[in-house]
Image 1 (tube, rainbow, N blue to C red):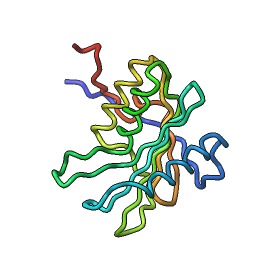
Image 2: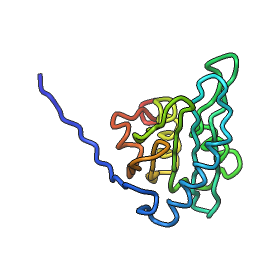
Image 3: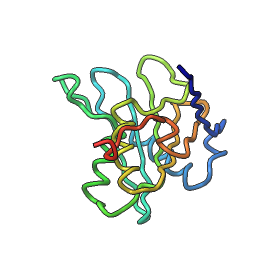
Amino acid sequence: MRKISITSQFSAYSTLQELPNDVQNLMEQAVAIRKKAYAPYSKFRVGAALLLDNGNTVLGSNQENAAYPSGLCAERVAIFQAGAIYPEAKILKMAITAASDFNKTIAPIPPCGACRQSIAEYETQQETPIEIYFMGETGDIYKSDSLKNLLPFMFDKNFL
């Protein structure tokens, strides 16, 4: 038996003002759409904003349903909308922010497993990495240069 080691590296920003201007704007849009999330059950609101290579921005917020868990996360709302409206565009950057109605989220909130798999599909399809920035309501903002950094043993079409 042998053991392998896998490491991930992230950039950390202390404030929104430290982010590059385009990412700061993207995160501000994610915060604005987060506030419009439909989260009557979890009270956990998530916003996502995507910057596409055609210059367009696509937004998404989580959408819950009484037939829990048939709702959809903000990241997948945005990704699927981008895929439907701009099927030829590549996703360059993604900004994600999350907040709870019960307590202040101060740690960066990464995408859930289902969202990571969906992001992986698009990153594999477009053959270029997607920069992912994520934060809580306040506090540090983390940047991952690619989904592969968040999901090192990524399952994609190459396994089929």
